[in-house]
Image 1 (cartoon, rainbow, N blue to C red):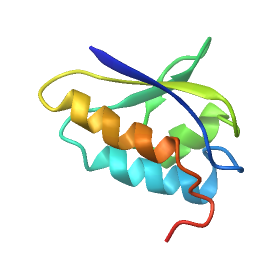
Image 2: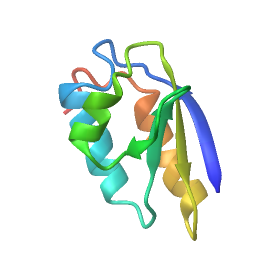
Image 3: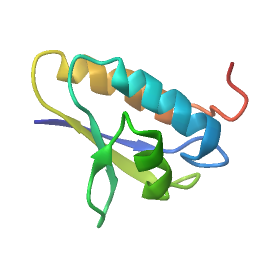
Length: 90
């Protein structure tokens, strides 16, 4: 199991547009990626609803986890998105 800790950079947190972009990227990966805040149960990073119910706000640290072939590269890709301000991304 691999993990990445990353700080949410979008001002609206993982809600609405940023959640949709992260979910789309996570779903496209060859492994299942989960995301959680400390003290919470993990949710699927490929689920917009899961991301929005996580309640990750701007500045919160989240933990991404995945296992299997390609997990490290998949986590790097999704972590980079979470660490980017996606509020106005196209």
